[in-house]
Length: 234
Image (cartoon, rainbow, N blue to C red; front, top):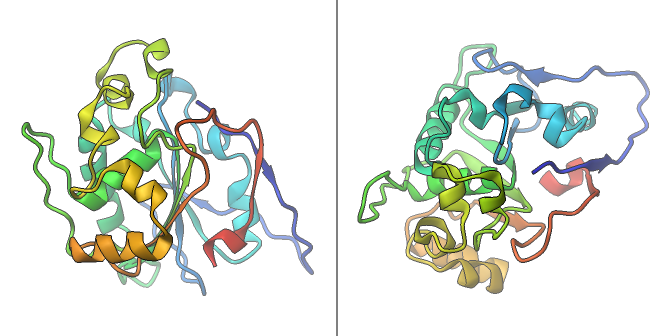
């Protein structure tokens, strides 16, 4: 499940190198919130990498003075549940600090495929219990979320990758993510206008400042190529 990105070039008066900040390292201060990328389902974690999913998006953002970070779901062993990854993602965000020691209080996120479900699980505070229980974060710390080919309705191709905890949750038959988030059905989220989505989410305790962009639905195959530009995070 890779997404090939055709990145838009930007003319610069001077050259800038890519700045993908390693996990655990302080984040350089800048004029824009950092952007955290989340990858999707990985059949083989030995080959998981930022560039394998997002190409040189870090270089593009660096050119616009935007710092890039990467939450790699392969850092957790044994293909844990999406709920477990959502909790880990929350811990990842909470641990972020700038070089001056102050906490990073706001980020933007770009999530590919299953990475979008990890973001949703974190925002909903979904617990790894049955029946489903939710404990959403009081301050999610996410300004904007961009979903790239996230299977909000599940995906029929999940079974082609085998049967583990993650592929089971990615299945259209799985109720945990294909049917609910904060008590709202996935079709409601996708069909409603942006204003209606935010108003409904705010009524359920979500961050009303959170902006959501869904660039592809799970009912269509992931695009072979696309574009990514900092304007999407403006």
